[in-house]
Amino acid sequence: MKKINLGFVLNFNKNSWQGGSVYLSNLIKQIKKNSKVINPVILTNYKLSNKDISEFNKIKIINSKLFS
Image (cartoon, rainbow, N blue to C red; front, top):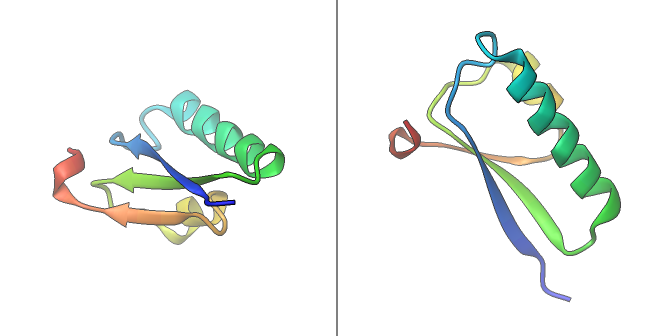
């Protein structure tokens, strides 16, 4: 079965809106846990720290100015 890439735009500073980042993190964890078809991808214009990246373990992260 072919996987579907599903992008989530993270276009805010994680420290300025923690509720949004927690929501996104929990949503992606549940998708990874319950779906064998959906492959979540983070689309962002921010340079994420190693701590931020660790929350999105094994998820492809695409950095681009297009997501500002």
